[in-house]
Image (tube, rainbow, N blue to C red; front, side, top):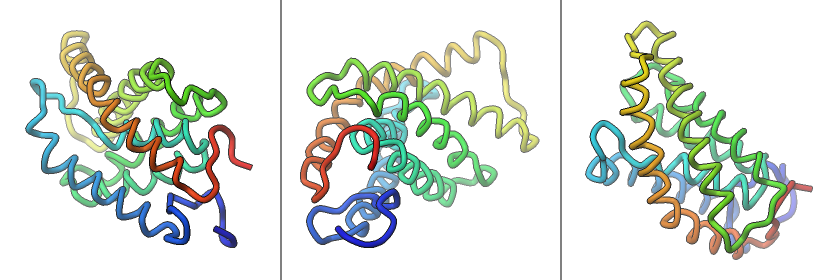
Length: 184
C-alpha cells in the first residue's frame, strides 16, 4: 500500500486499504455490545477492544495500536450513554501498555500478550473509573470494590485472549507490509 500516512494504516490485505480494518473494528464493537454482556462474570465482561489494541500494538507497532485505540474508543463512546471519553481515554492507556510489547517477537507465545493483557485491563478500568468520577458520577475506590471489579475482568480478558490473538495474528500476516515490532 503506497501513499498516505503508514501509521494510519489500520489494516487491509492487498489493496483493500483501511476500509477492511475499519469494518473489522466496527464488527468488534458490535460483538462487544451484543455478545459480550452474555459472557459476563458478575459485573465484569470480556473487553475484546482492549485485547485487540494490545495484540495489534504488539503485532503492528505502537502507532497502529494507537490508531486502533482511537478508532475503537470513539466507536465505543458513540454507543455509550456515559460521558464522552469514557472509552477513548482508557483505550489510549491500553495502547501505551501494548506499545511495551512492540519490540518483542513472541508470535507463537501468549506469555507476553497475557502479561500485557492483565496490565492493559487494569489500566483501562482504573482510567475509566477516574474519568467517570471526574465527570461527576460517583465511583468507589475501596479495596473490595476494586478487587471485585478488577480480578474478574482480568481473568475474563485472559480467557478470551486466544480468541482475539490468533485471528489477529493471521490477519496481520496477510497484510501487504507484514511487520512485528516498531514501525518504520
